[in-house]
Amino acid sequence: MNEFTLLKNFEFDTLSLPDLLRNRFARLNFDISYAKSSENNKYCAFWNSEHLLFLDWEKGIKLTQYKGTDIANCWITNTGILLVEDWSDSSLNGKITIFYGQEKLFTRSFKANILNTGLSPDGKYAAVQLLRSNNAHSNQLFIYDIATKKRYTINKGYLTSDTYAFANDKVLLNYKDFKAIYDISTGNFVRKINN
Image (cartoon, rainbow, N blue to C red; front, top):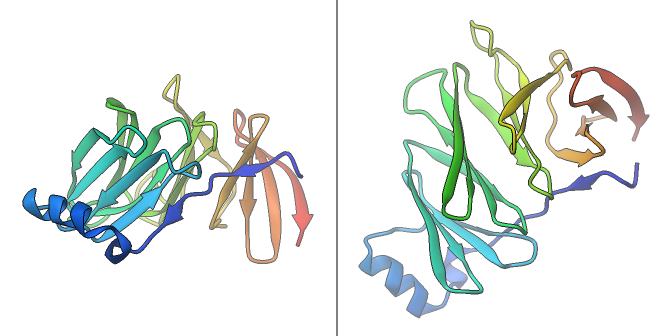
């Protein structure tokens, strides 16, 4: 189980940003509600419900500016892969958008609300857990191979995980009382691990 890795991002209080930076955002009429950095602190995202700014923190350059309808969260790898979780302003909708630096790789929309998302630390996979709805997206856990844009469905029933750890084309889901490993390409259960 030690081979599974979980992407770590660091959220920080926007009030702790230097005044110079907060003033610069204010001049852009960009009100920051949330901020997150990659584990290596090279990349940062600043956002509110409608706008997200993705920066290469080391170089001090803007990589991407994203306009959404209800941005709920994002994930950033140490290599500059960004996943934006955007809830819709209408019921039973949500979407994810994946960037690599300045390049938008793809967007996927869903006919269900998003519970949570995740990225593999190496930027190979993106996970999106959907909530119950009255269509085929109901309670689905989709894993996307970011390079090929191929979608895999994990056959996990009605269980939901808080986190997604990845290793060797498998995903580890963390439930309340146990952990479960699934094969990404088949979506099938591999084994259960008691907490």
